[in-house]
Image 1 (cartoon, rainbow, N blue to C red):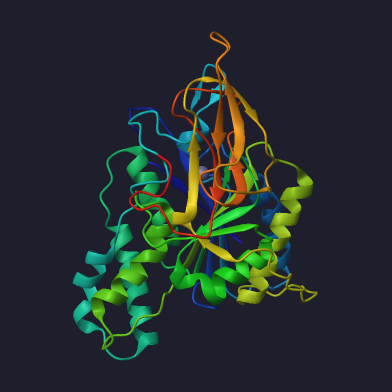
Image 2 (image 1 turned 90 degrees about the vertical axis):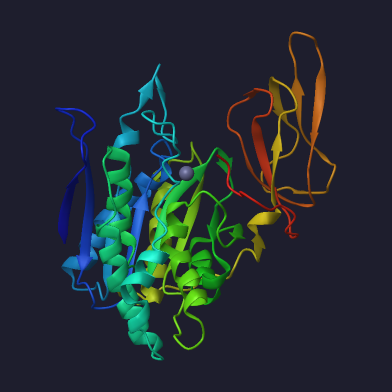
Length: 374
Ligand SMILES: [Zn+2]
């Protein structure tokens, strides 16, 4: 095992932020998998899963059981970890500039085309190898002036040539769910979903905003479509955002279960060999379109009372929550926007007007444009 320390560019003299990555196995020996925790720094479950993975990977590495390359970034956002305001952790947005930490990752399609587009031929395997090299070089050449730009460049540099990227996040309160792309759902995405036991799998191509996972995966899809059938290119990277339930689902029991599930995936993916071949669990859901996951918003401010529980199947128009304005006594029902599974909701119980308070996953793709919340 090798530990790398990546010191980020400081915003001002004397500032120092460091990103740490733990490297197991050998580059090129087999599939490369990158697992990173808590890019939104106040989403804690991923960091506990990484803590459990850390010791298990060290054991497996010491036993010579890593057959590919496994990179673990146990705390992906040293900038956000330090952002506390009035006793509250603020981890989603960079306080220096207001940007969401998981947006604006570089699209390297043009850079790769310029570097190797003319050299590719009819051999898909050779094309993929050339594209991986070009991706590494393009990520390393990204400009960065601020700590945030340097963080994005560093994270992308660690993951851009990977076969699998697992980005561990969480929601407010939620069932275990994931986001990935249609091109990589079968068989790899489905395999990871089964290992984890996710209850909702949301598929989209570019969902808007350039999140980390899509920067790693969609570049392959976009390159393939630009290169055309004469220069074939596989969807070379499964990148998945895993939402490890809710912010407060931080227990050793859940984290150790999730870590073992990731190890089961790594075993089936060929990145490592567990001493006892793990059983592949049955799938717990069929994938549904991200464009069918519909957010609900508070019509006015007030006390938020949920009338339905997470995991409930709901019909369109069915009341999910009630908002009570304690000043006027006004009470309003918030109805389900679709028929589907009530799978995520806000953890706070006081809402401002327009606040997103929950999501229902339906089967029909009815939304378009930017599909992720700000
Ligand atoms: Zn997140």
